[in-house]
Image: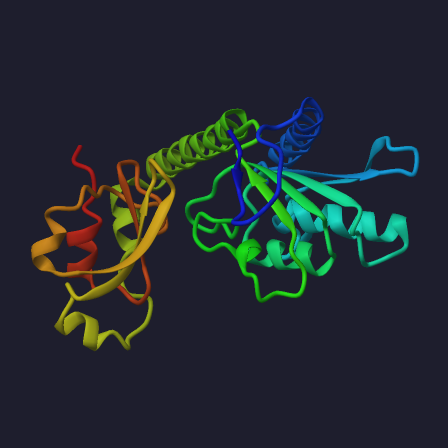
Length: 270
């Protein structure tokens, strides 16, 4: 069943046309996967004077390949549609996207005056249509875009989960290959301080601000770790202090003293 924005007057269920459009968006998400981007796809549909809905533009995630942090699937499709229609306002258009829009995309869609947005999977980390914030539900804004979530949510979410699972497996394989090439001594040297100015950390090596990433769910959060906490965290050898081959990856923001490196990133035993 769809999840609706507060006060939105929307159908009780998704129509066959909605699901067809979302499947087209899923095809776009597959394009993103093929080029190494997070698989999110979008399709913009516009109803013509004859009452027939037609695809105006499509887009898929490409911030990495285009070096553009704004190149989310929604905005790629939005730019194409605005150019083709010849107007920066698209009040007679509906956007279908496989993942709940972030705050940037949500505001762009409302600025473009979309009449409706339909998304697939919910995003508990950055979703701006109810999961984290609900920008579409703010009554004070001068335009209200109707939003529905959960259209083909399971296949949309499965694609994302499979992508991140594949990426984690590749990162682990790369880490294992590098360890085999460099050997334990080379990996240990990588964690030694690169600069001389690390006296503060050397004096208190177990008070580090770190970004912890749960590699099973791709959830990340900042925390502080001290000597007592270190033993409770399942850590192994980190590849460039980034991704561990077990449950948690720890990215240290700052220089590591040798003692801290040994505590948080112990080398595997032969």
